[in-house]
Amino acid sequence: FTQRVLRRGYYARVITQRVITRGFYAEGYYAEVITQRVITQRVITQRVITQGFYAEGYYAEGFYAEGYYAEGVITQRVITQRVITQRVITQRVITQRFILGPMGNPLFSVHDNLSPVVSVEQNFDSLLIPPDHPSRKKGDNYYINRTTMLRAHTSAHQRELVSAGLDAFLLAGDVYRRDEIDCSHYPVFHQMEGVRLFSNHELFSAVEGGELLSLFEPNGRRTPQKQEEHSLEAVKLLEFNLKSTLTSLIQQLFSPEVELRWVDCFFPFTHPSFELEVLFRGQWMEVLGCGVMEQRILRSAGAEHKLGWAFGLGLERLAMVLFDIPDIRLFWSRDERFLEQFRGGDLHRPISFKPLSKFPSLHNDISFWLPESGSFSQNDFFDLVRSVGGDLVEQVTRVDQFTHPKTGRSSECYRIVYRHMERTLTQQEVKQTHERIESAAESQLGVRGRY
Image (cartoon, rainbow, N blue to C red):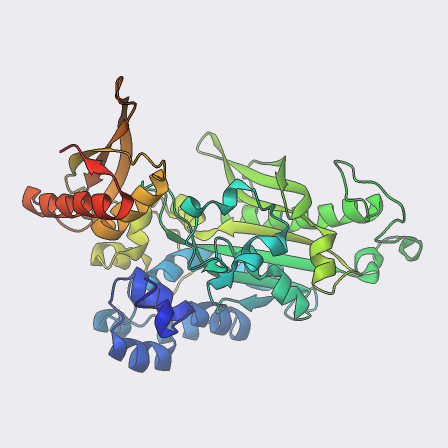
């Protein structure tokens, strides 16, 4: 990863298009096709939302014409945006009610081309995440070196955008986390971040007697309802604005009748903080997190005279729910049976994913002694399996643990489930991949095989 991409100076587009899609975007495609036609997430969010507000000509005739699909220009990377943005980003309600202000002028600026390579300070310190916080663990993140990493969330850009003078923006982008392997987790996925800041006049202008109210109170104290610097009136009005805005968003995505609830929670970068849950198919499902931004973040960004709220949501997760997509790997598929279901220019056409033929799975177990140094990390193993096995790996589950009664050495056994999304795998193919995983585990993780 670092040798092929980062040392050669490539950034956001190359990381997601050259590496994640495993080489489909060869030099010729990237330089001549993708760059010239700009068939990327940038087109969807900047040209479709910002310029044309998803005019039919942009969406149906230009960038998603049948010819582009046939020539192979729109591939793994773009189908992700096509599926996700059809309802999650480019829905008419978001462009007209959420992004546009009451006078029809753009309220939120849209950003999606910021490099996913950020500093550790941006990803954690700028958001007040403590040095000993579990989210910083090496096993959960893609660190490039001591000071640089792939962003684990789009919030890493909050301070820099506020510092640039923006007080209302949406930020969409790819984020990277090392995690377990199953149908709902992938090492790269997409988030959308929203931030809205208010001055004293903006927040209180519509309130009777608002000229007498203030965002801040001197000598205040921190309570479960507010931060020490904020006035209770300001926080309650800000909270109402935040919740009503996001309620409208979720009602449009699901239905006006959707049952939802707000749950108090904790984030290091907001207070008070909330999660929004919806009742979907009989179960409560968390769809986003949000809250009143910590004033220390705004102060460090030069916006100390304003208050703000922020929210973040996962795009693939919403798309999987809205379209009944059972496996996150499908977002990276070029199978025509999948792509065909999301073609067409009508953004409001109801879509329910029709399952592809279920090809049979094969599974092999791998058992090994852990290194005595204690350096083994389960997420390191998951990442290695994903690197070697790619999208052939559907799931990895630890099925057994054992400690030798005499030596005290520990061993673990994992079951790796293999399934191709587009054809039937042979046992010989799986065996070759499995042997490469065994060899890589011994050489890279210091384990000793028991096979």
